[in-house]
Image (tube, rainbow, N blue to C red; front, side, top):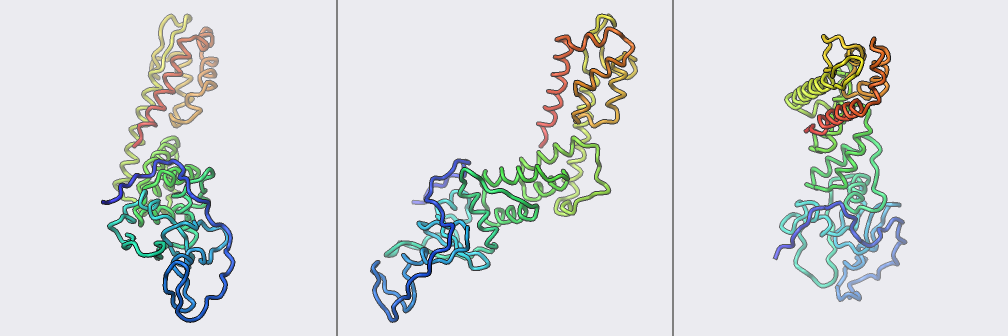
Length: 328
């Protein structure tokens, strides 16, 4: 009966500690055919399956488990002892009916070697995400992030720890379009939304700084991003134009409109007209207060601290946050 598979929930898996130091060389094997303690017949100088994992040479610090039932071998020939059920929990590539299926039970432990077309560094990083610990691995370069995403895609891996790691790294990439293009190429939705949010918050068009990573996304995808930004900016400006609160000196509730000529509103709209509406300065307390102080109505500054005015500003900022949260 096929084993059920549970996708990664993001919870740490309780497993034996990995081997992170080289293992001493084994004693010489006796020549000739002999029966070992596991009941196997071994060829000259050939370790039994029970010995094979323990005798693997391991570079300093790579992730490998002594009780693993599968050996993944990197392009450089380094071996990683892993658990097949852990791999199957995050990828259909390792399913029981796939290439990595276990053969029928045979005497002694099931330890089988499979070559993976990944470098030692990439395979080690990938496994550290699949075996999460208290201190998740970090990604320190765009090249490393892309290599990890490509490996996960090739092996059909779906892992929340990788999603979080990629989102965290791409949010630190200074160029939002570069981060967006990388996330879009590999289908990392959370990272893509975060990168799009940062792109919406800037007035930069990046026409003079086009990242090469855009070559991996379609023109349609990029145009959809541009249209989404234009719609979001228009909605934000509309919300800013509608902010209002009353002033005893003006004798009415002010509705922000450049043509109204209201003292502080005219000042405010002039100040923010060249700013991105999502930028902090556009709706900061300082911007509002300066606009009121420089207006012609001497009563306007007093209304700034009223509950009505505070609520109006809070509502405005909430509306802007909601627009950004709806990025897809």
